[in-house]
Length: 189
Image (cartoon, rainbow, N blue to C red; front, side):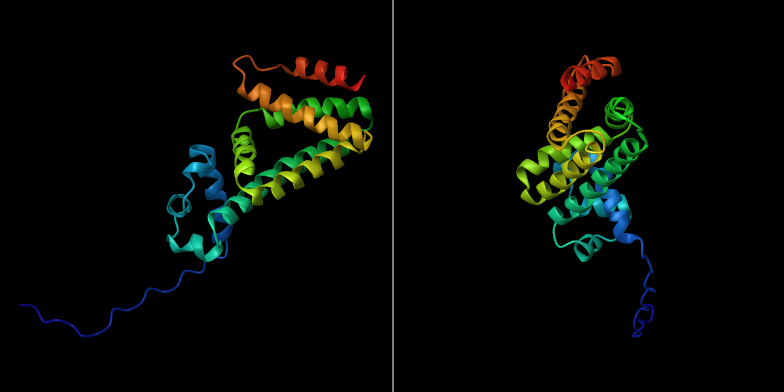
């Protein structure tokens, strides 16, 4: 029989990982894009982020907090692109074209943005904390539109954009950029 050691097992050195929280947020977005909000769990996010399971509860008090952080990151990234498009538009005609590009390329283009947006809309209906995320996003969109349109028109135009996006994303016959442009011109007459 081999001798047994009474010496304590040395502890592993603690890993310095200052970006872990950000990786968890990115992992949550990846899980949402692949499996939907219903697929988000502490275990799945930790697996995707390649961190110990306890990391999610160390950095976030709940899954709702993690979802809010993830969706805020998504909404911020989309809002920044739209704000830049509207800032670069020199006049109302160019602003309309910027909205067309935003809908057809940014929101409906390739990638997971539309999946994340739709998941946010559905989750915000069920999780009140996420309404703050959608409200902030809508406010930023309206403010960007107000560079070229009055506040009432900006709010209505923002709602039209959301409708155009959802209609096109869920349709088997999505609207083309030309059809989106025509709808915007019709609305803004």
